[in-house]
Length: 365
Image 1 (cartoon, rainbow, N blue to C red):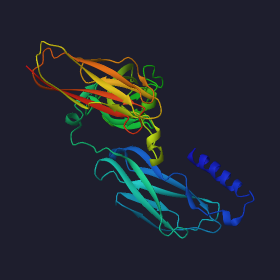
Image 2 (image 1 turned 90 degrees about the horizontal axis):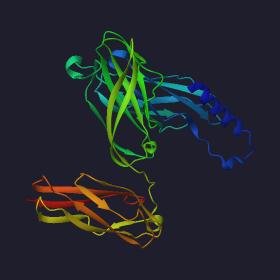
Image 3 (image 1 turned 90 degrees about the vertical axis):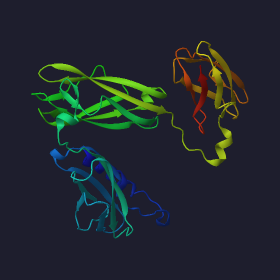
Image 4 (image 1 turned 60 degrees about the horizontal axis):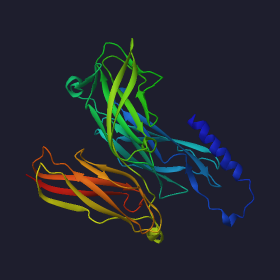
């Protein structure tokens, strides 16, 4: 399939060459790569080496050939044809990753030097090397339906709404029978895709769940928690719970300097409030003033407090240019004592500072 898609691209490029243009307006591009980056996902040493294929088109008016290939690690071995490649033809370069190197996520650079580009093109091979533990029983100690995992909860880290996040979750099948994912996943939300590698994990072997999480479809901001219920097939069907957590931020394109003063701007009159000494028996309220200092309308996407004991009231979530609005927050210190810190986090369409956090300090008697 990959070869077919790329050959279609080649066809389009060749067809475009018949369009009449002046030669001085065309800049020859050398070798055009189908992909400069290939992610091969999880590499399990017991399943052998990881392999990535890179395809390229000779988009010049003469023959091209590879003079030298340099990798930044001996764990990446490159195979390619040393023959010349005629104009308009497709070449192939294969990179093999040796999983006996250090475990964890990896990114390897391959520099391909050719006669048409002596300084070279840079290619990147990415993935996750999942080392085999000395003792699967003690390493995969979190058991779910006799499938062993390292952790009960999976932290996806910081996510931005412009692209999905991929997570590799390795596990060990301690059952006496093979397992696989049900093709029909009725309980899986639209913003999550899961694939099992290999598709069938045999008894007493390892497998990987490749999780793709799309925060734009999650349609939420801030700290989130999700419990996935994967339908797994063995001799019979069972549900496998997977607990995920992450912090989602809205993504904004970097602003050119000329646009800095032409966007919404959220100003909060106090970013740190000290309530001083307060009694655990008394509820305390204060006012925060929000202002839009920008020329365009400001929208407060979401407001989050880090404790149910801290609540707020805000009359609206939109401010026109120059408008101000008061937020009243209330802190109930009941059952607390000593130095205390609470936060109110604002998510807005201010592209310069889309997330702002106000810290509220107190000393509770």
